Length: 129
Image 1 (cartoon, one colour):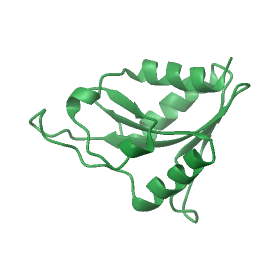
Image 2 (image 1 turned 45 degrees about the vertical axis):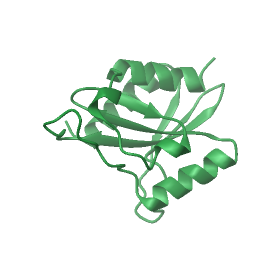
Image 3 (image 1 turned 30 degrees about the horizontal axis):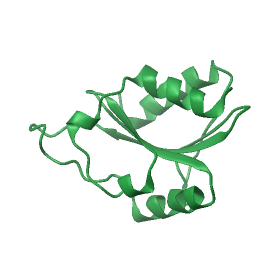
């Protein structure tokens, strides 16, 4: 499954919990995150990334996958007080980065510890009471 397929699967599950999920097509608005979630508690802007092929060595750093425009856009929303994050997934697992200082740093495979269901639960917890 590719990034789009994983995003669709996550959005379908999130919607089943009463969260509005919008997949954003950014052909004219470079830098805008992939998804916007809205619930009765808060909204959340998410840049989804999927690593289709992990490095052979677990110690190999995986460079940030966010573009400069994406980092700037979600960083600006973070500064405004909005809830934003990057969610990075792979066949091994997922991680959620909520701190702008993380977005430009490489990650290691050992950071991909969450399941897709845990990512869904986290999104619901951020947006719903």
